[in-house]
Image (cartoon, rainbow, N blue to C red; front, side, top):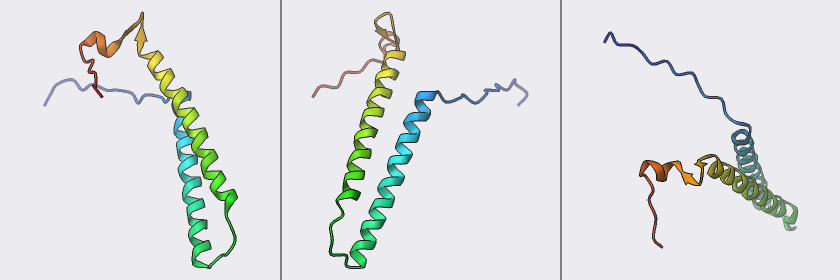
Length: 98
């Protein structure tokens, strides 16, 4: 094999992609920690309530939804030029009928 090798440099992540990944990681870590605390409470037969922990999970899920919605809207806008979506221009447009 004596052909030319195509050397591709690794692509840098955009700021929006870093923010989305960071929020997803933070959300996942917080949910796992809260569920771990809840398991410990059950194992130790804690008789109180854990409303602050449940609220924390709900709040982080809401933040994640907002960030991912903004990220996907940005991605949609980036993949459109002059009103034509790139996939549609390439003939890869598929509609899913519900």
